[in-house]
Image (cartoon, rainbow, N blue to C red; front, side, top):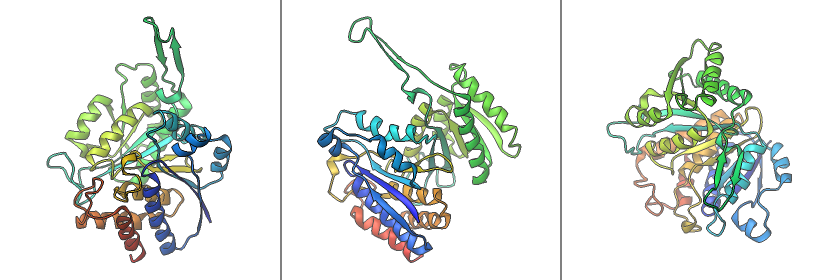
Length: 353
């Protein structure tokens, strides 16, 4: 029996989480596995009531789970950064979820803003290092609040952290077996120390994978090619900051934030899965937000726990619904269906497949 923890979070998070678990449950019944669900209330409301964000005891409990599902984080009455750092980043760092995996896939029936590009052109994956770099929190202020103020934020790259990310990317490219091409995205012409380490490690690890084509692109060039020639990419591996930026660009070219899902992984251990959109608090409780990204994240969660057949069922149900063009617009209140109705359609498709 799988142990699944949910953190529905803030705003529309509980609504999309409900649909994601609805589809997950349909897949479990279709394929024939069991799971136990533990729901938590970590988020803005709890913080405002108790002052507690994500206690260490919860991290200890998460360690024994098979997967964590996160709905959305962000509350209008809580200062930006408190919940994001206290829940999302704390979970990533404390659980050592050193990979952020972001498929960038344009589904049939979904529009992209890129002219003359279709599903065959936009189908790649970004592997982002998730626990080092500029997000390590190393730095501080000197003479804060004065005209002489100095703010320092340091980029931390360790050989261990870089190598395990790059090795994962090579293994993922091999498993994906699409173009068998891995591109390293960096800024080694300026960040000469940090990204020399990345390139040197990439070259050394790459010797173990002669069947994988190796490519390189500076991050600014990567953003250009993602728009002009997305078909050039198969798998991209990059550092934490650059990954954060280019994955949002990836979301736009695949149809928007309402389509994009991600996984925070430590292979062989608990993973955390989420739609990449925000909490959209103004739509809370209105049952009109698009749950596609949330449901796609549940499919990634199925694959992570080893239920690949169930994951394929979920993806196929998503593809069929989107290709049917029943949903004309992915904006809140413009789908032509409620949040729960979209979840019902996908769950029913999984159950009857």
